[in-house]
Length: 209
Image (cartoon, rainbow, N blue to C red; front, side, top):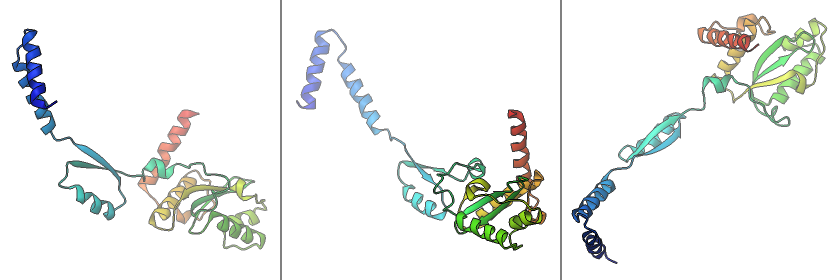
């Protein structure tokens, strides 16, 4: 049935039931206006740098609005997420070694796998090599060494770069603040941001106790 015929039939039914037939015209006009209203659509992009800007410029003259998200939040970067037991030591990034006897901490970074880096620390310990501050601590204090699953903790997974350096400094600063680190004290660079984060985390820990 054609739209014109539908309109005539509708008017006829309205008239027979004593309704104002002008209602049909008003409804048609309202429907037409709704169709003409532009519908705003949103597209979400994870911001990774100039590549993201280049892509989003393509939507400049379109009705699509752009919103950005980021995965590098402070909470995400500083939180230690559980990793599968068989895979957690096959990546690179920032790690922590704990002395089995006194529980002092050593924080380091590696661009290779955590597993390879651990084997180096173990070798330095075995042959009394001072290249590893962690191994030197164990030897000097006659402390024992444990398996990788017991004494190594993955703090942050990342490839070599400035972000990895920053995360390593942050964790070293935290252990220094707690008087619990084996690293050279000079590696704990003063930082207002790190100090604020450590103080906030310490306060939260005391509140939950």
